[in-house]
Amino acid sequence: MVTDDNFQQATQLSFKAQSFLEKRAIAPTPINFSVLYLYYSQQNSELSSALDKAIKDSTQIDAFFLESLFSEYISNSSSLEKNVLAPFESTLKMTLASINTQVENEQEALFDLEKVDKALAKMSQHKSLHSVVNFLVKSVNDSQQQRKVLTDQLNKTSDEVNSLRNQLEQSKQEANIDTLTGLFNRRGCEQKLKELKLTDVHSSLIIDIDHFKKVNDNFGHFIGDKVIQHVAKIIENNIDSEDIAVRYGGEEFLVVMAHKSIDKAHYFAEKIRNAVGKLKLVQKQTSTSLPPISVSIGVAELEDDNDWLSLFKRSDKALYRAKNSGRNCCVLADKIMA
Image (tube, rainbow, N blue to C red; front, side, top):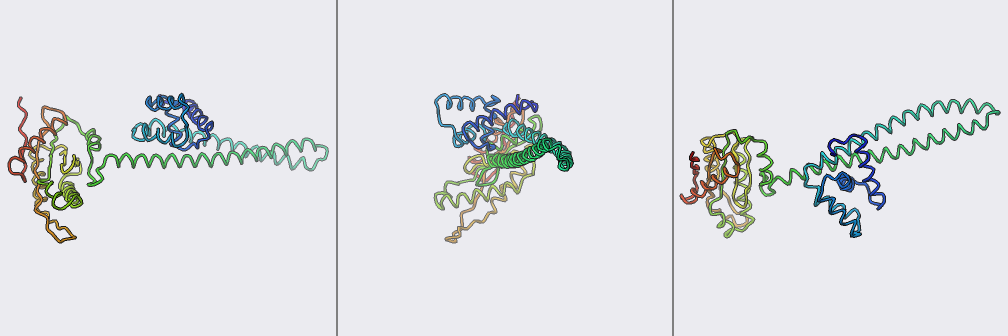
């Protein structure tokens, strides 16, 4: 597989990708190269099928088409770094090292040839040999110039690979973050949960802003968004760094209380509830004070369910009970009966 490619295998895949691009006069940018590298390595069956179909249907294959394939089949793939960029960068480094070695050897040869050339210039009887040496000196100089151009191009491509890697990492981070609050979204939560062991003690909070619809109806969605942001910041400021705060949807939040029992999680839940209750929000344009903001919270601890989704469902049931108990309170989930 690609991850185990040696230099020769990676070079062969690189050559095929490069040939495809050259044949269609497409620039060998990292994005275009990535698409073709994955195509020839057969690492992405959906991408390969799409490109095979385009070739069969005589679809125009240009940079725009390859970029669309990249966006659809590669950009969200966590394997891009390992399966494409890493082997490609390795190939670039090896190629550059090989060129540098050849340049050093040519420098030595050029030094020797120039000494011979100077000696022959003083001997009229060796004019023909002198011409041969002159030709060799010129050829080596031309070769070095070509290698310099190639090296510059390869270095530029290497910089583009690094830039693409940084963009992918940034995109990966952005894809896991809720843009309004800066908390994790559901996808980010799923990624963070992989760092925790289900066999350890963990709890969860489901937090819902009380009567939030009235805030939107009376003050507009802009003010509603500001309320969500304030509550999110309070949640973030009242949990530990190992805990996972998530905007679960709308005005609802999830907090995974890592390595905490239900009693400890309840303590943090009350801190959050009390801090939200102290919020004093004013609409600047009209100087109108918003009504008091409160939250209801359901708390549960991971037990014999040994499953994140089951834990969150029990927290949600506890939240429902909190809503039915007058809101602005924390309710602990019932323990699972053996």
